[in-house]
Length: 114
Length: 110
Image (cartoon, rainbow over all chains, first blue to last red; front, side):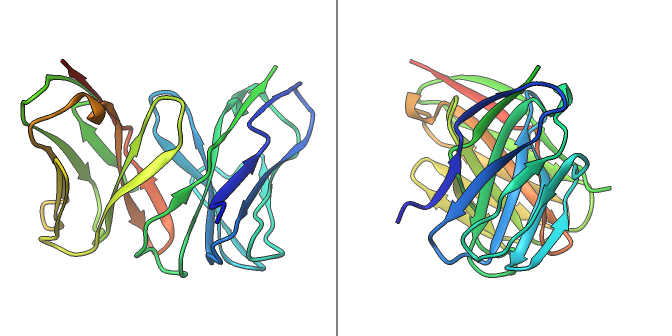
């Protein structure tokens, strides 16, 4: 199993550009989530999904969209990038819909918005 | 609003010593998670604590949960250099919303 994969690893955007961060898992996990990690602030939940077709907002959803058309994929879209979205983004997944299981994290995407 | 606080934020300790990292959270939660992150890397799950009084141990690390005190501890026994990393605790708001602490950066000195 590849586990949780994310692409790209690094990305530089200009203010106002849009892009999609890709996340995929091959463990048949129902729960998937996106976080951003900023220095000194830990991880903050952006959006999550408990299964195909079901998504919901986390702590910091503004400026980001998600969709979940398949169990495997959970892309994160930045509609109009802003410097405040410069961060490291992590995707995670876990087995089942309830939060009783450990989350597996992807390697991260380091995003810089100029 | 659920807040998760860790202390200390930074910890420098000698090899062979014992120490404890504390994780306090502000509202009721019966599930708590500990993760490890090496510099420039992703997060690795260490422990999942699912009930009051839960205690789990893996090698030199032992985690416990007191839901009444809203407190979890991560105890390090006879620290070694390989334990140098940042440690995060996280709790769940509702069913699915994970809230992370700001992390404790641990440096073990030879």
